[in-house]
Structures are given as structure tokens and as C-alpha cells.
Length: 86
Image 1: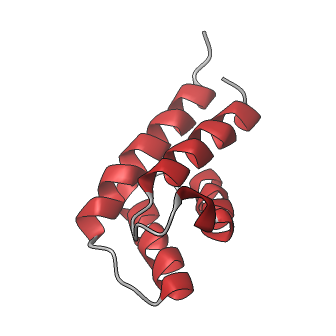
Image 2: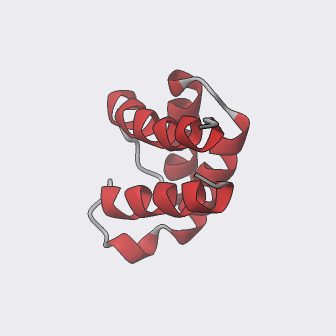
Image 3: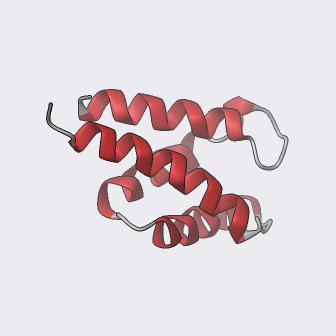
């Protein structure tokens, strides 16, 4: 999997996540920020904390860390899939 494909898959998962039920098309900035963090971080907890902070900063609402951890595992799965060499 190429990096661009990983980015598309990650963005799609984040769009569908819709943690505040405001509509899938309301998270463009947050998705961009989370995908950038995905490139930098390799640990689910670290990525989850960043996801939590990014969304909280934008919406002034808190997401339980457990929900962010769940999504971080999915995103990191795409990252490791993109890194694998077959």
C-alpha cells in the first residue's frame, strides 16, 4: 500500500467516525491534522491522545480516550500495512 492510499483510507475511517454526530463532512481540518500525526506517531496511546486533543481543540468537546484508542488502532493498521514490503 502506498502512502497516498494509506492517507485516503485513514481519512475515510475518520470521516465515518463522526464522534460528535455533526455530519461526516464537518471534520476536514481535524482529519488533516490526525493524518499528519499518523505519519509521526507509532504508538496507539500517543496517537489517541493527539486525536483527543485535535478534536477537543476544534469542537471544545471531550472524547473519551478509549474511543480515540479504538480509532488509533485502525489508523495504525493502515500505516503498518503501507510499510509492509511483500
